[in-house]
Image (cartoon, rainbow, N blue to C red; front, side, top):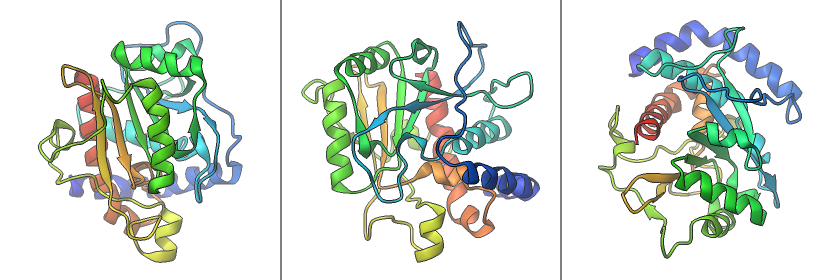
Length: 269
């Protein structure tokens, strides 16, 4: 895994850095890639990013924009190179990565949805119902990159409205759970910090000494509906893969290993 990734990133380093810097200059507010109208599924994997309303702010966070769009793009490309996952591409060859909201009917064409910085999320009553319907109909949500007890309290209060904890409790995932073993064996969730914090501190945490957790909510059959990588920014291990070789070596192999595990799990359960 590590040897294959090192070779791939060495080839892609320059292009990834240029594209990432271009987006960073644009920042939040760059044009959104909305899914086309009608049925846009083609039997291949497309990455769907959840757009939501933030009701509070977090240091180093930019709400739903966090890690958009290159985390999703890079995960799709590496999945196509390092596994048998077949990804969807547009006519221009660009991986099909879409921004969807809970109000969009397009949500129900996305079997896999990812959201970042969810410690700032606030849901309306109709959105609560939509998310519950999506998850119970077979959808999968991975939330990532939220840190500290205040963020946890905000997120857990919102998801409790969607999936009441008396029926769908949040649990820490054991080391033998399939999301840690489907393709690659990991001892637990790796802790990844954003690249700018890593450059300042050389550490792995964005909030002092914090422990990363991998938590989930399952249905009565044991299928994960929601996965939570708390106190970790897995998305940055994908988004920033080509910007610094040392950052890549420290974070990207394990970040991609978890990403591929989760993707294969979500698309087969």
